[in-house]
Amino acid sequence: MSETVSRPLLPTAIEASLGLAARARARLVASPLARALAVPAVLFLLTLVVRAFSFHLSVIDTDEGLYLLQAREWLRGGWPYVAVWDMHPVGAPALFAAALTLFGKSIMTIRLLGAICVATTAWLTYRTVRQLHGPRLVGFAAAVLYIGQSVLLGGLASNTEILFAPFVSGAIFLGVRAAVQPGQAPRWRDLAAMGALMGCALTIKPVVAPMGCLAFVLLVLPAWWGGAMRWRRVLAMAAAYATLCLLPTVLFGLAYAARGQFQFFLYGSFLAPLAYAGGAVSAAQAWARITDAGTDLLFPLALALVAVAGLRRRSLNHPAALLVVVALLWFLTAVFAVAGPGMWFNHYFVILMAPLAILAAMGAWKLAWMLRPGLALPAFVGLVGAVAIHAWSIDTMPRLERGWDIPDPPRQVAEIIRQQIRRGEPIFIANYHPAVYVMSGAGVPTRFAFPGHLTCEWDRVTGVDVDAEVKRILAERPRIIVVDRGYWRSMRRRVRVNIGTTLRRSYVKVAEVQEVAGMVEIWRRL
Image (tube, rainbow, N blue to C red; front, side):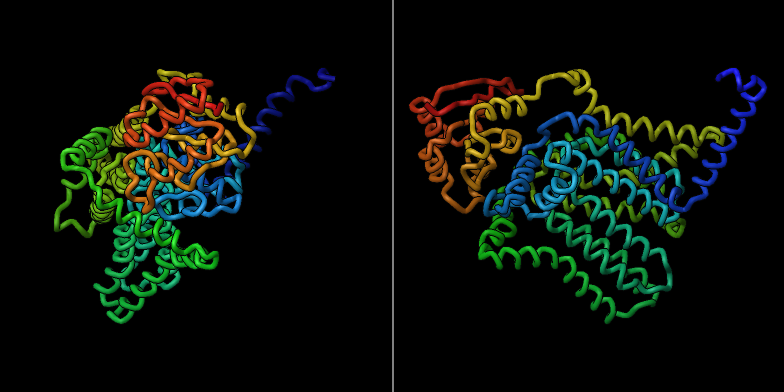
């Protein structure tokens, strides 16, 4: 049969195939939908590559495991604060629960949620640059820099700063879009969308409030300044915006009240965070954490300084200058969000990364165009690529050096526990990752499942006698107790004594798993 196709026809067939491919590509490029999806699709694929290690690890951050446990219990009917307590709003476990419902109940789902949030924030960063008439290449560079930086400072985990970033970036984008329309009052539908976005962000973490204020200022100030709207409308929009921002939290409160559990919601969402904020770290600790974060973000910060140094009063009407001013305002507002709790944990600095990416991209653009025109474009691409790869490498290269096939201690612990218990049977994880409850299929013996609240230093925020709670758990003799000896001293002395006595009298050690700081011990009831 192959001989029925003569040789002269083969080049013709190839040419025809190439022609069909070229016409299909032309139609694809000409399609508005394809053009609209091209940038977000590329950014999402890049995010998956950059955050590949997140899909390999079962535990990246202990907080993330708490949200996962809350989400699991919520899907079983036990609401946050009531079934599993925390001092954060319920937005993070709500997003986790939604993701688990949509994509399946696995750790991979939580990693995918983080990747979606990062890619969405990167795309909105790109759109913000374009809305302020920044070059397309600068917008794409800012998005790439954000994706590269997102793995730093605990950002590899699907933590609150990663989760609320798309909502904040979306609100800033809407504010910017209104600000660049001179002579027009902002539309109520834009205000409604902005309020809904910030309302969702506030249910994840209240530190977003300063960025919410900035978004509103961007929305109304240029129009008011230009005479396109009067004070009465500004005040009306401010009242409507505040109402919309508070609405999701109010709705959650009403849902808890309908269940007769409003007191749990009130304390967990409002009173406990106030108690937590009263324990700010010392100035020396704060400076050490700021220095660590600044070291990781050194090159983006240096490029940002280049962008800001080029500002001149007489050139503020230029689109490039306006872009730098807006990004700088966003960055300075985010600094208030980082500093507000007074703790300066590394993942708080993730809040700075979107505006910092814009400033860094503009700094790279300025440096590149100081060269000869023929060298500007390759220099810009090379500089942005180098900074993004450097940020990615800080977190990823040490992981690559250790290899993909290294043991995963939390998974090992969870597998040992799974073999020792009936599914759903309560165990007690004294000072290890709460994600192990989920991975092992175990039940929780207390609503204070986070070790930092129950056995370690943050017991004061719970509002209960946690030493009595530990005694109650031990008195019920859970089948399994998990102890991380590497962090044994991080527990309060009274708790260590009670747990140690119980283990010696009533338990036998069935397994040990090597962790970074020491052995994780699994004890089974005699």
